[in-house]
Image (cartoon, rainbow, N blue to C red; front, side, top):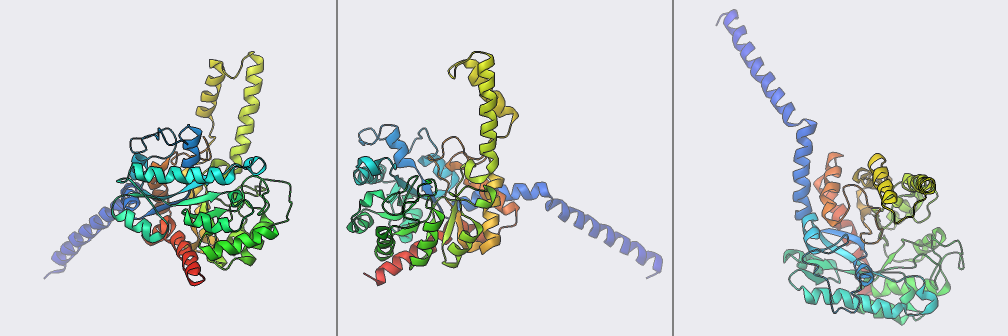
Length: 417
């Protein structure tokens, strides 16, 4: 074969190689990768169990007037709020922990246990009213069983330990009623411990009774939830507990300096060292300090505008001001900032100690763009895929990390009862 002919053949081969490389590069372009990740995220949301550490549906329904259970709204058709069956199915949500929220005011007036029982009754009523759609879940195995049959599990966590009402036997009582975590306090100090929101520090951490409660929760198989508690309470819980803990709906303090309700890097690392999990809260005030700053700016400008124009809050021009301001200014956090919080925890501790704890129906109109209700989880999974998280990583974030803690707590209780 002469050199001229050989060089021609080599040139053709080179052209094919270049075309192949160009085609391959085009298929992996950022635009195509985003399209692929969007589809993959939607598929993963349906493939993996998604558990969310905190959804305030029961108290939301109570606020809507459904506590007596006579007119339970059709959750299977859609209701006002952040959660219902159609949107949960669209988003791939399979195991939302129903928050049995007890307002701190009842610590003074009484009635905490009574309200807790009524909200638990409500959750049970939902599962008996819609047995093909919802099921109770007392363990990860229950969630898996419901998932395989197409049902959404409704495990329960109690937000505020005040329904224990000073009686250690009520820890077992609430375990028997289906409660699988207890947030030790809420917005005020109670008889168990101090609150991150309350400047009054009665106990400088856990009370003597609170220490009994933590150990009894370990014994009975109820996860200790360190959301809402003061820093000193957190460190005392970490010293005392025999099993991993969760922060069912907390975020990273690095992004909200001075906000004690979120967790510091040191706390996150210690929670992870004890094999626990922080579940990221979606409320904008939990995600960025800029949210509160922007709110103050808007409110200040609105006051000036209303005064100059002699308006009240009910006037259409005042409402129009809000609409226009929102169009021109970024008030809420977005799905990228939620992913930033997850990134930060992973950098501090590895992939095994982070999960999701949205606080849907609990943080009002402060949810991030892209995560405005329970249909939005695929948007977050897509963002994580865009950042290089593997399917295995996402599976851990969606449920495996929390299931590990949940099983560890139940196993410990089983060996000690």
